[in-house]
Image (tube, rainbow, N blue to C red; front, side, top):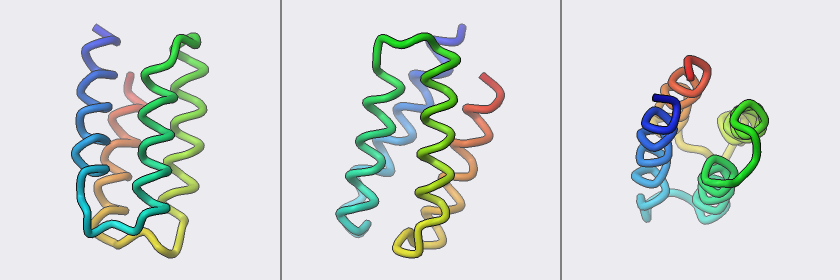
Length: 81
């Protein structure tokens, strides 16, 4: 169950990352978050690290507002897992 939910979160992040209109630093950070979630660490540690990175990305001034809204949605999904 958790694996399926994480897969849907990773899919949402990959969809965001594929947006070429996003600044390169935002896409790079999204890629790092995807790697964290795909890693071999304990799921609670992955979740914590990914949430921290998502929060810092949402606070980044170069993140467009519509992307920020999508990041908040992904954060909410991850908090429920």
